[in-house]
Length: 159
Image (tube, rainbow, N blue to C red; front, top):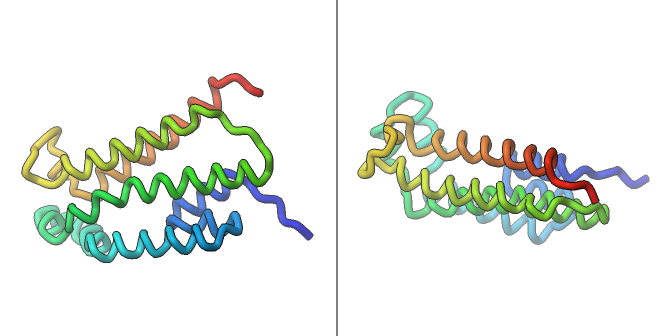
């Protein structure tokens, strides 16, 4: 029996961990590549330790421990993994998707990368350095992804 798949479920699996959506779509090599990339970036940027210190509200320690050179890769890999899982599932199901759907994904990865730079401490814009290097990017990326995807699905003409 073939289990029906959903593009939304594929995207949500990739939100959990980049690569899981590709495994859900049975793209095992691509999924493994995303998982290895996520693991390498996470390990080398000390992201989990920075998240730990951010939850303790020790933002200066979080900023000292994190490696921003590696962290800059994370928003792009994360968002591309979500988009790729959604796109692959739509192609497998031969279901059209709005062509403008790429815009919120591109915008959120771009903004997420810029916010990583702005939350690094030396540049004090909108007091982003007080929120921490983790929460700023994650919150705004998810808001852009969700709001942009909703708007495109809501207002784009149906094929």
